Figure 1 (spheres, rainbow, N blue to C red):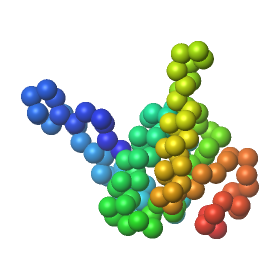
Figure 2: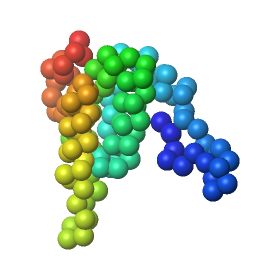
Figure 3: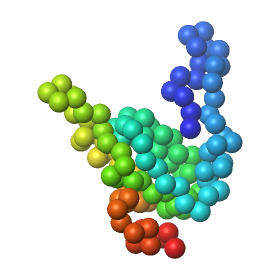
Length: 114
């Protein structure tokens, strides 16, 4: 939705929020999200989208579906494991009204999809 760094070291604007893309997503009947990594890029993108939806209309979050089994956290065995942080982020999104679903479940069983 937006890069992490919006200004250079001198405070000059070098990037901005992609308001056109955000508006396009908000207009869809459903937004299905998957990708890598659940603990970082995906979580930050969803958090950005959630914030924008909460500003526009809190009911918008109910049309977001997070494909739990089509994303995974950063894990480097015996070095670092972000599973707990990723799960906590997805729980936060679910608590806000987004739906955590699995790709193997029939789409008709997803809450509010039909």
